[in-house]
Length: 282
Image 1 (spheres, rainbow, N blue to C red):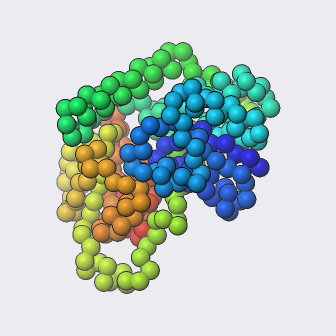
Image 2: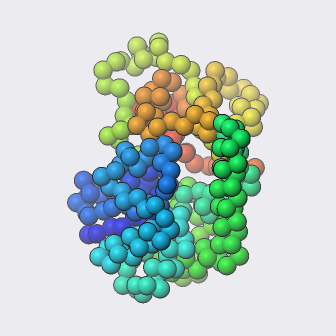
Image 3: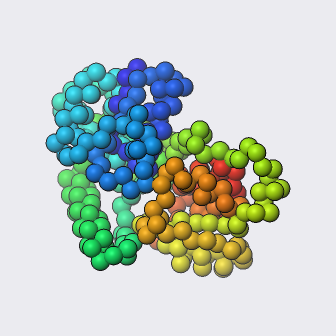
């Protein structure tokens, strides 16, 4: 079977393509539009990914590769469902996969404050995304795309509330984020007792969507006393290849995500990766 993944979120499509190839024996690949590989995902999974440097090149690659694909699995880009359905009619099975803020939205995003130039550049990108998302909602792109897809997949259970299809033939599915167990795994050499003696207490990640002060206050109110290291992934991006060793310095990963004034009732991808490395997750 030929599977084409369109775009990506946090290497999810890359991991799916890898396991679909090596475990299931499918011909699976990813086309990604990304001029910046901030966390080194696509360098790490370069054998599975074609990078497009422009919107025009991105669409050209998708159309060309979709001709021979049995399934087109589209990540975040709801607009591509409509374009491909118009191009190929019902001859292709199309999956639309949401990962979080692409459908949930985000009321407020933070800047990394690495430099003034960096903040201006990132602010412009965030404004562009916000305007694009508003336009998608106004044009009811998500609704149209969901009803044209063969299935709608979400990465956390709360996102099922945003899958508003009226077409009974469209399946709505919750698929937890896949973890590459060749990369994220416990240390095999040292015993857990020795590890505990040298490991630090706990760690959490600060990024564009989290509210760390709220999370820390929440822990204090609930009498959870941990010596927590807060790693700012905006100011100090962690390369994907380095994340397993970083996580394994700690005993516990704290995964309290407070987004848009709500606690997200599911583990993040980083939390699942921490579990795979042998950490406790709160």
